[in-house]
Length: 206
Length: 206
DNA sequence: ATTCGCGTCAACTATCCGGTTGACCTCCCG
DNA sequence: CGGGAGGTCAACCGGATAGTTGACGCGAAT
Image (cartoon, rainbow over all chains, first blue to last red):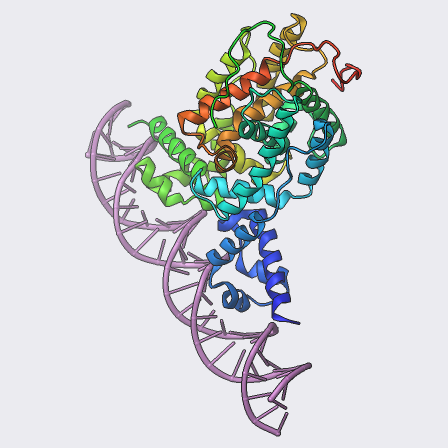
């Protein structure tokens, strides 16, 4: 068994453990057992628990997240597929939560890398705006964040989702109804013919 | 100093501690110090750490959360004020996150009480639908959850908000731009005159 | 065959932390 | 006075856990 294999197995085990119980709750012995090695190797490769945690975070956060905006005209369809994608990345979502609870909104690991991902989604939004599919009054990055919120919240606070809607996000019924609701919202992103409130449509910021 | 005073001081200290570092990360000694008493009293009143945690959760979760829907016609304005309200309830948001990370979407404390809160928001939505302000095709509860998502996400994953938008939710610039974006969305909840996609407008579920 | 990289194994230390114990203090009430 | 309720104080126990140590195993390359 090569060194790389073992390192990777440790990393995978640690990812599972940290996603499940966080840094404080994680047990080095448990990670070793899950990785099928002994904990001395962990200290050998990663120094200490914190080093292991940072490596895991950097690794996971450098992975491309689901893009909330696609090139296609049907935003709702794209959104639905990306939701399913996110559904399979529960560890990513959970690690985001641990990160938020630990560090607030301060600097985070792999910041540059992650910022780059955002660029693509914002560009896709701008393209849709240029083509008249989306009201150009929307600030692309904030609209991306809005879509991200709608995509991620069922996985981030599933108990709240269940309390409010009555269905658990893991049930097909939830998915169906949620996609319908978000779909209705997305179908309304186009330019508005000034109806009730006549406000300016200048962009709020860059 | 009466018994009640001390109990409450312990509860407040514990709320702060649990919101900050969760159940696993909380230190009984730290809670005692913060409450200005000795930890024996904590065991006296609450049995053990878990009992204290459950009491705290029940207490906090029985508080009325911000209502995402108001009676007023201007949803955007209402939303903005409720966001500011939520901004001051960071402990509530954080405890929701700890709850989610601990228990998934299973049963939660004070479930009945919390469900009751949802009823009011859904009712307000239905009223707005009856008055024609909101497209009756929306499922009220799912729309409430969508609004909740948009309201809470900046506080739940502030680091993601900053990565995507470039501004931290604690900055006034973020608030301004976010309110603008959500406001634009909310202004589009009305019935649509069949434009591009002619789909049915039947309600997806109850 | 010797050596070296990779990994194993078991035992150990030090510390932290939840929870306990028992003695004592202080004020009020009868 | 006596006694009990509410609270204090410091020390302690026991188990869990991060991190260490040193001896050993084993397969492959020189």
